[in-house]
Structures are given as structure tokens and as C-alpha cells.
Image 1 (tube, rainbow, N blue to C red):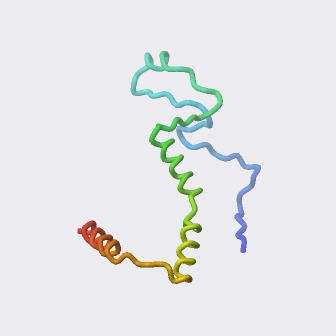
Image 2: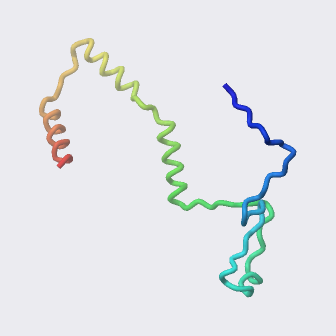
Image 3: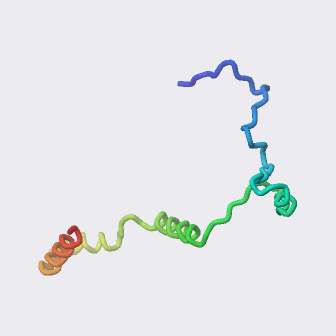
Length: 107
């Protein structure tokens, strides 16, 4: 289903937002006229963004997590084979220790 927007023509000019006129730089008038003269020249190419080292690290971590497999298929296959062949043994002491550790972390 589509909705048609009426009373709008692509030939009509779009009004600019107040205080914004494309890629131009808005001067900070709170510092007076002297600061405007000493301000660096605006870049003609548009806006730029600089990321901190923390942000770059976060991007790398996100990429690593996105590329990591959700399931370790090799380990799952080995476990299935051990269960099917009857050679898999549960270490009751290790299971109990992990359960106690989990309970301690909850408190």
C-alpha cells in the first residue's frame, strides 16, 4: 500500500532551517568580534568527525563480535560424537563448583 502526498511539488523550494545554511560555519557570537577574526578558516569540503581512541576500539570490538561464530561447531560436533558413542562423562564435581560459583555471583 502506498500513500500519495498531495499539495507538494518537487519544484517548490525547500526552506532552510533557521540557523543553518548548508555547509557554512556559524560563528560563535558570545566571544565578540575579536575571536571571529582569529578563528581558523572553515573547511570547504563540509563537516568532519574525529573519533577518539575509545570509539575506534569499540568499532574494532564490534566488528570482531559480528564476525565471530555464534556456536563453536567443532566443539559441538565433538560433544555429539562423544555422547553418541557413550564416551562422554559428566564431571559432577566441576558441575557443582560452577553452580556454586553462579549462586555466589548472584548475591
